[in-house]
Image 1 (tube, rainbow, N blue to C red):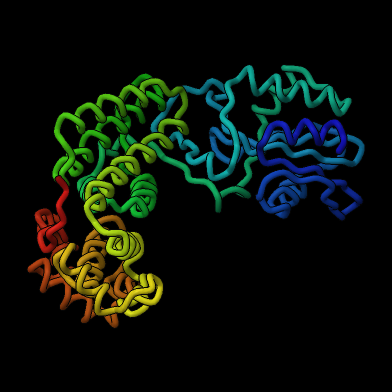
Image 2 (tube, rainbow, N blue to C red):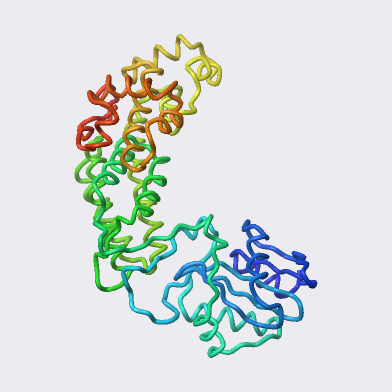
Length: 395
């Protein structure tokens, strides 16, 4: 490895080194999993003489490009915890979320400038702070990362947390369904339902939103059997953790981690008294009701007879494996009705109902109203829970 490659590797972020040969691009070194074509497409949009260019993927996500003697180094994307052009926070400001997915880092201004200055010296293509300022002012817009990033658009018409998303998150926590947390949170973000809750900047605003979201959702954990004192202690701990964070991305990640922690704790409450085999079947169905095995397949996986497994499952859970799967599917239907605009036919297909009519029959039998009625009035499903039919001891 060359010295510059060793340095890039030490940063532990996405980066690439490309040799430019007329209109050909040869990858000489690459870090992380971002497709080479994404970087090459960025390179094709700029001249290939010695230069320093900044690509802007959102107001807070940037890739830094150095071209020296026919070799291009693209470092990033990296998240910047400041607004380079010192613009005031405004309602149209879009912010990047989910840096963990990109395996990137969050930089303050001084860290960012030092990184750029050091690397430019390393490849003997020095720039100064004035050059960096100019590069930020003239940053080239790039959509090459759009498929792997999530942006949040704050809007003054947003609200603390919309009712349907609140219900979906509470349902996921109440069921101990950690897999539903991420999808629900991302759809909430895309909905534009996060309002400006502070005039002290985007980080304070999203902290306030997170505190409301966490406190509201924790009520469902209490409803699922969590001790009141434990729940309120957790709420204080969660809020203290959010207050200690300094960037938007960190706060959003922590909100998701907190919600998953709630769901995991509820999951443990539900599972702690179950036998090993029943716990496995129970959690497999909760995590993925549409693709979970049949009772016969569960028996084969666990090395026990279908009859024996079905008997102990009904004894501990209160319903058969097949009935439990329907209950969890119907609960997932309610979540999808609340957080998506999917037609019922698509929901039926996604959850492996035989058709929309089958979904409607099962739904009405359990909830008491049709899914179409709930779609028009979400309050109709407020009191419904699969635990109405189960006898799980959460004590």
